[in-house]
Length: 94
Image: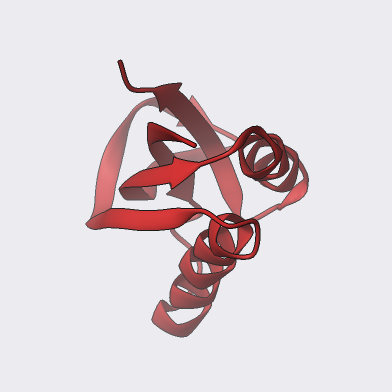
């Protein structure tokens, strides 16, 4: 298990309940595969540096996890197919 820092941007058009559901779904990706959520920082709605899928703003969530390769691969897969997430990244900590 390694530590990873990640961030994803949720569509700003979702209501608060739907946004919380997306965050819970992403946390579940890691916890269901034996990982640990060490920290979650919800930055809220912020301006994007450039337009993504016709959005100028997005709901930013930054997190720190301890996870294995299967959880990392599933996170990437889920973020690529989930329409509510417009961008994501995961970086291995040294």
